[in-house]
Image (cartoon, rainbow, N blue to C red; front, side, top):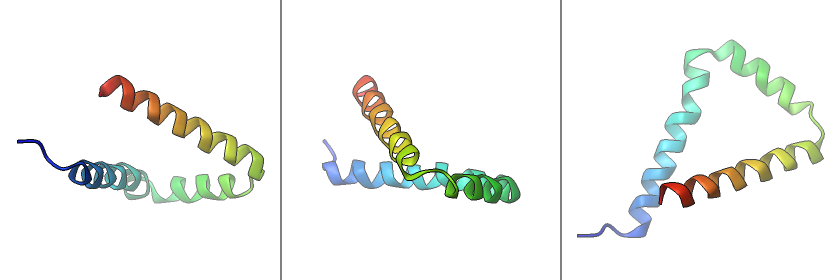
Length: 65
């Protein structure tokens, strides 16, 4: 029996939360330092980085699916 699409989306979101929580849990001082450096970056650079992450995510989803 196939699970509904929203089940997969919720599971994917949960996995993102777990992965995103690893760094502040394991090394809060380095995470804080990284956030301070990222906060000082130019908006254009952050947007480019975000776009690159989305493109990589779509590629991973296509290859894994």
